[in-house]
Length: 78
Image (cartoon, rainbow, N blue to C red; front, side, top):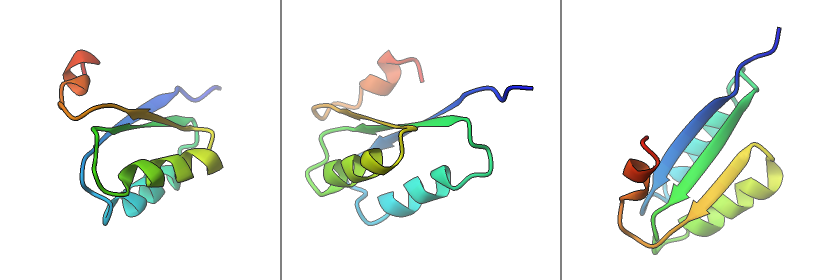
């Protein structure tokens, strides 16, 4: 039996202090068939580089960088 793909979308803005813990918590889940979509909303801190670092080590991670606005989640109907 094949496990269904679960998509986890995490909006990100100025959370560099908590971002590694958040990402680690998701990728360490026992359910393996998931994709993690990190949406950086133009964060001025180190969030963009943290996202890219994790993307390089886990193929399940996708990163979207956009200018600040907060509308992407609504446009994606999330």
